[in-house]
Image (tube, rainbow, N blue to C red):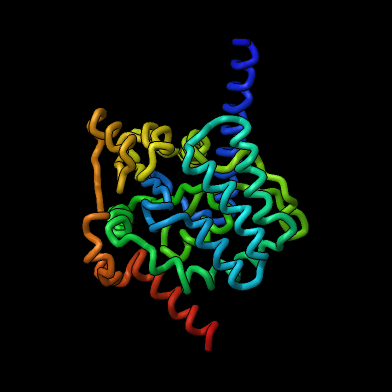
Length: 292
């Protein structure tokens, strides 16, 4: 029995490493903005940078554009939410989450998804950004540090979010692509839990980042492995488990949920015309141009 459990554990860890390494490699191809000698800050997306689940916002936006049926989005949402909310690292739950992710992109063209993703960001997602977290990210940019998103969202969508926010890049779930379309196979499991930490480590090794000098931000106890692999972990809008862990380990805690009245802070105030404000301003202009 113990041998079987050890084998399952070893297989799971190997799959996490595969997912992390694939995500780091895909991020390099998609962004390629590494600054030699820089330190970095790693931000979770869902309920850290953006209210709600980014993948659900994308899926709902695609459904509204008849990209797939309401029945498909319901099936996807049920599977994905069960996995994410449970925080389970069980192999069967991982397989279920993988199947849900595959159903989301299988057979679709990458360029089509990205065009629609840009529209959905402008129409829906930009209003769900959390100003306090964006200000933290901007502070790192102003200090000459890299800022990376780390999310279970498909890496192409994650890179789109990073680009629209004027950040360095993104680590996300990697799907196989052939002839410009998704094959329906993932490279390892979704980038969740331990897989996020493996992706951060893989990126740090390749780019020469000293993780003891880096920062990480998240709201979820599922991201304790990622937060633990940097020298400066910060719990943002934390769940109860993460809050308790942060207090026990003397991690910083930032909570913007009690400041709902200031969620409409003017984005240019973050940093003049630079970084995040500039990225959103350019995106706004391009979005208006597409609609005109």
